[in-house]
Image (tube, rainbow, N blue to C red):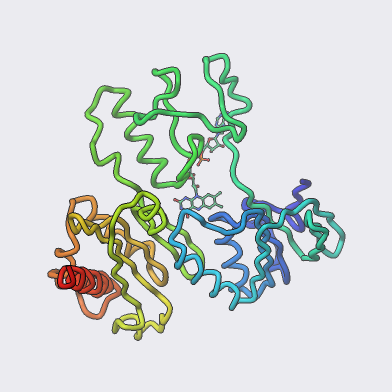
Length: 314
Ligand SMILES: Cc1cc2nc3c(=O)[nH]c(=O)nc-3n(C[C@H](O)[C@H](O)[C@H](O)COP(=O)(O)OP(=O)(O)OC[C@H]3O[C@@H](n4cnc5c(N)ncnc54)[C@H](O)[C@@H]3O)c2cc1C
């Protein structure tokens, strides 16, 4: 692809755009593609998202992704799932994206966000006895050691989740291990994931689909922002927080948030999970009123009420 910072761009080229495009094709519905699709749609750009898979953000809660799609469609975003951009032709007045199915989509700008590559090509890894996969990624063990144990790799170059916070922490942990310092057990805890779509998505832990696939029994507690005073004050009628609670020991298995402040709110769940807390802590805790944090108490009450019903019927 000939990137020209105007008609055919990647996420770096966005900052060089001289004006907000009237129309845009986003090739790839990963985190970055969906974040930019949200931003430009909110600015009035007519966005078409083309994604070769049948769904997007498949590592997120499916209900949350459905809610996001509803909101983006409301901002005039068109989704083309199961489709691939085969070619893009740049013209003075814009670009034409041709899909493998033969469809043509004219747009001021086409943005490619079809995944990131590790920049390992020029490192001559083979001279150190290492190799990268076809996306330039290097394999590591639980301590971030590569196949050559005195060489460590962290950050995007080792793949998922490829986030700023996790990359920094991986670097700290690798340094700990390399220098013989204790390797904290908490290092195995799952990191929070934040997606700055409009509205925001954030979660920590497992999804309903993953737990179901692994036959882990759980109950769901839901709180909707519109039931909270703060949700009504800020006019967020769509936000939702969902707790996945273990039926075995009442611990939190996952926290999924969609709506205002999701990427901040998730940290309350992270703290409870990290300290091995149960849903009962959230039922008994008093939260400031009016806040979105109260959604934890409402969702915890919802989950425990359902669990009480199960106990009553058993
Ligand atoms: C558009 C976009 C939005 C993002 N938004 C978020 C977000 O909201 N939140 C979040 O947590 N993460 C976000 N990320 C991901 C985040 O930026 C990365 O996970 C993080 O920067 C990874 O850090 P890193 O050190 O592994 O790699 P990088 O930050 O890419 O740093 C690698 C550095 O190495 C340099 N380098 C490469 N090859 C060589 C070489 N041969 N010699 C010397 N130097 C070299 C590169 O120039 C670069 O400066 C986003 C990424 C993108 C692309």
